Image (tube, rainbow over all chains, first blue to last red; front, top):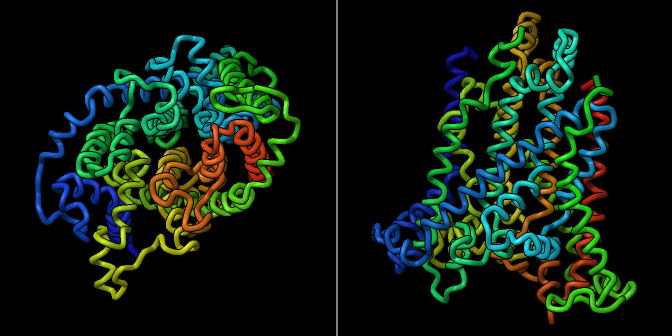
Length: 270
Length: 290
């Protein structure tokens, strides 16, 4: 097959997969544009159209505050997790028997947090960090360190150790070599890890619902779950709120994607 | 190199471990060995009572096998699909692009909303697919009606939700395959598959194994989907372990002792399966020399 035909085959395959994968998200959009009576209309698209869900939802829940809280928590947690995880991943990938830390981190991530939430609650209350955004930044950030370390470890392992050895021979310390020679090549991994921890924290429900119950500290996921308790669930408004949460994250993913490639692929080291 | 990597690089992560592994695990063990309710934790020592009560639960014990099957199938599906999609994305250029970011949307959507969207899509009366189902002669078809089907539907939704994670990481990993190696494989006349197995896979193997390990854990952690879509049913068909433990915790006056015992048992099962996967990873990476 010649290259350009092949490229088109790839593009078409991707487009088909993307459309299929997006049906549920498109359906959410369609729900958000329907009046309540039209929710169960047996179709993927509305029979009656309305935009009121997008205005009414701001009266139903404190959407503005919730969005802000979710963003603060997710950005803070992503930065915290990756700042802790990057040196730790260098340690696990390069130090003799650093693997053991990797195993311990995985163990801490395996336990379902449902019951572990009780001791954490006591700890945060003791520190005065319940109902507090900083508290949720710390909890989400630390809880996701294992994910970030595991991901970054894989990326560190791909960098030829000769690069660091050359830097050390040139007179840098090991930590200096890590900073000056390894880190620049690690960017795709760092960006991927930042995005992943951002997504995981942004969508966290369990920590948010138990550790932050005041109106000022509630997150979007908690706000979305509030709809579920009603006798007549306002699916349209719920979908509208969810989409208003997704849209800026999509923009973030688009903005971050150009940093996903880099390092060795750009030929920075030859 | 390895001996000179200073210990302090790992200190913050270790501090996090103390906070998130050692302290809660100690607390869990204490809860599991005592009569404990939510209002009155650690009332009195109860020996192995909580463990025998944990193991006599009709919902919990079978949920361990069910969760394991779920997590293993989910891992195989998400990692394979994720890598395949990432390769397709790379095949059209170095940019993740609008399509790549679109593929991430399931990962970005709040789990509650994912549950709601799929539940309404699949509702036999008035659901988004209802008309399409009757058009192909499946009018009133309820995919969540039978046990096996409901399990597979939840699996499918979970795979839909977590494949984007594998896509994102695999895509970033493919970016660190050195172009000069690809070029020399091409000059040597290696075909696409040969190039993939000899050049690409060795470069991305460490990341792909990490993705597999994390996907395994995500598969064991499924909770929100069950709460919103099936509430564990029909029967116990979709009662995966976190949901079973959650129900134990809600039982009576919030039976935290038994829930803690079940959490520990569950952790042992997850740990055992994860160990098998990490051992396979260690062997594979050693063989690859990375």
